[in-house]
Length: 417
View (tube, rainbow, N blue to C red):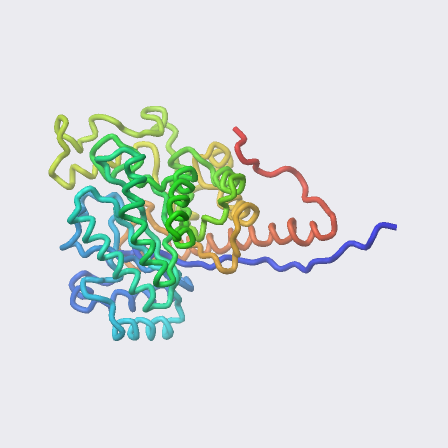
């Protein structure tokens, strides 16, 4: 007789939900938060509780008076909910920690999204100094991660940017590691960051570059401080699908690199792809005059037509269910995204954050009453999708597998066209 099958109990493991506070930049009006910087954090913690989100990703940014990128030139203006014009000292940390306890809302990480390889040396020094303040604030608030970009020096080719990463960015990672922090890199290519025709303006845009960068980090003893904050919207933007990205990382032995997730989608416009392809609009955008970039920030915004002529950001749950778009990599298949993460990545779901990021243009409403139910609905969708994926994974890969019972069918396959 065959040996009796072992029985494993059903225990689905959900990920931890969070939201980036840039979802509502003007929750606390500028005049009030400039005068009392930590008021913005306190009010966002209360707002998170109202929309039933247990954690926040605290958005940090250079104050508008110090930024080298005018808000008018940004596709998605960032929020300095965490105001670091003055250092985040013990008194400020105590105040924010008390607000977190009162609201019962936690902190997943701090996000500061800027070009850390900026060509201008003075601007780059300012960004690095600000990043160090972000690191210190993260320690003071008890989180172990900071999320951001690597960036790119647009005056240099990619190989030269790798050298610049080694010289300029690795020292930041050493500072992060010394504080017990992990730096998680979001992979957006940032095509509209410059008025040139370069597309990849953040060199950490895909698995190939991640691995090259991590190898540099390993040579300097900071490999464990460098991780990826994966955002599927950017994979869709570059014609990739999540399952194949994760499979590639597993195939190459780097499936440990992803340490967290932004939950933001992308909806590809087939007409826009027909007109311009995945490189977007290359000419007559309005961001240049002849061969000279426009000095008008409002005109510089047109550089983002590299992206916006064929794609639009999706707030999870706001795009129609479209199985064909999923198969064509023209919208995020959220259920398969969450399944693939469990099946292919070296993560502990119960310690991994899903951070909802809101950049759906038509719903970027700076009105608490109107935006609240939109964000609440998106968070509920994200929670439900992850719960479904957790149940499917536990049932198929743990309960059935332990008893030698195969799952049915084939499922989505990596690399399949």
